[in-house]
Length: 168
Image 1: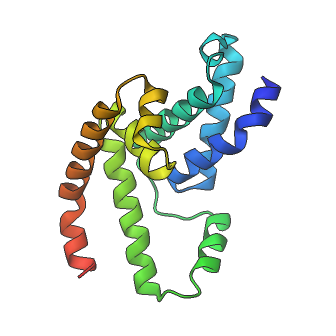
Image 2: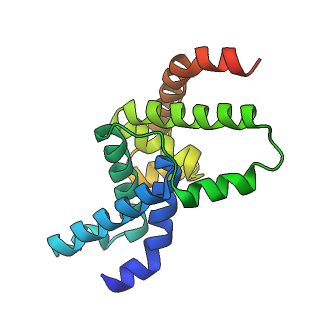
């Protein structure tokens, strides 16, 4: 388990951070995943492809965290510092709109069904191609394409009004 942690903890953390938008939440997800593995002592599911298993676990745990929690709008110090560094070229209003949009997208993705959310995160947060997602999730690339199209349509419908107001 220690070898597995050393080999994959960065990827699990990055995946969780991209989904939750919070370093603290990403740490919680990382700990949750490896504590579950420690408690279960059953690593048979990991054997064929530990990277795929842990990526999927990170996505699921992150989405579960977002679905189950009323998120506070506070920002951790490390996140605020990172934001301050990135904000040198944007005005505060544009920065606020970007943060708001990112949060709306995260919330909308969390409301997608499990399969659609998994596929969306793998494609747009992790950068996998459709055929890679199909292999990871044990389905066809055509199914992935259809599910992603429906997910994008649903997200556009949910955040379209916001985009019309703020991105003219």
